[in-house]
Length: 386
Ligand SMILES: Cc1ncc(COP(=O)(O)O)c(C=O)c1O
Image 1 (cartoon, rainbow, N blue to C red):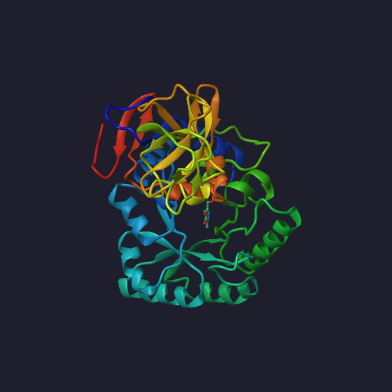
Image 2 (image 1 turned 90 degrees about the vertical axis):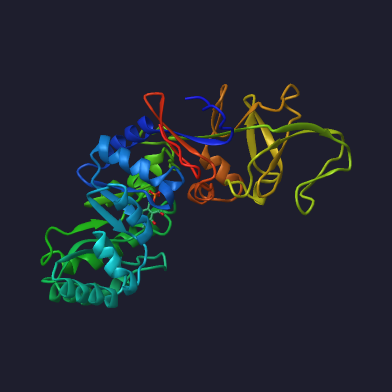
């Protein structure tokens, strides 16, 4: 791919890799359907270009977001098909959801009743999903309320259209017994619905469970991480390609004397003269103070420890790259020479999940999209375009 003129710090997004991953996931979970999770700006990659590419070239017709605004963003950018709002919503948001043809996820009976009231007012049948809490302790009906919810859904079936029932495992990388228990809770909740709603889609698995537990694929899987080439489960039964590379450059290289401090609140003390490199990104761009002392970035294919972080800067130990100069490339995620640094590792260094890390990279870092090796689009605070 390579640097675009005049853009120092950037995320480079490989749309071909995205599509390959999408197809690999389809193969993995078929006949279950894949819902593409594009919330949180498609895990920092850029929701609109990602969804558009999946729709146009992958034929994707099912997208999931977390908030109403994220759903509107997709609709205003010509994303058709089903857009499910997975997060919790309140009745004040319902008419907007209906206007934009978004499918809400209801986690309590009050929400279902209010959605049906709106459907009657509008004179049109509105779709919805139901959410069960199988052990995460967040949104959703508790599993013992299946009978009651099924009776309610049936009584409102003339007004609203129950498309699916979903839940989310609390610890898909945890013990198999724990996951099986949550799976059974989910199946138990769904059981009273099956006769009355034979075409209902059950969906429980996200990326990790899709890779680990084939019998939990059910009718649909909601996939975020795998689409973006992020697989925490090894060995991987599916070959994925990293979609994002995150690159910047050294803006200053200098030697600090012994006794000098680095970073706010004196994050690191120099004990003997030390060559450091300053980079033009920091907390606003994905790094955190927890990276200090535990994370590293690549310069000239070598790992360089992060010695300090600020809102807009980070400082690296350049002792392993004595030739490094201002202007040299720094890799936060991606390949450099024979070295590779993954988003999973960069997040882990700061005790963050990949989702947490990527969600912290603000839009001031331009997203540059490539197809067939050629630049096609830019997403940034100053606009852009092909
Ligand atoms: C309800 C729900 N489904 C699916 C996903 C996608 O998860 P993953 O990125 O692990 O595929 C998420 C992500 O947090 C989620 O909250």
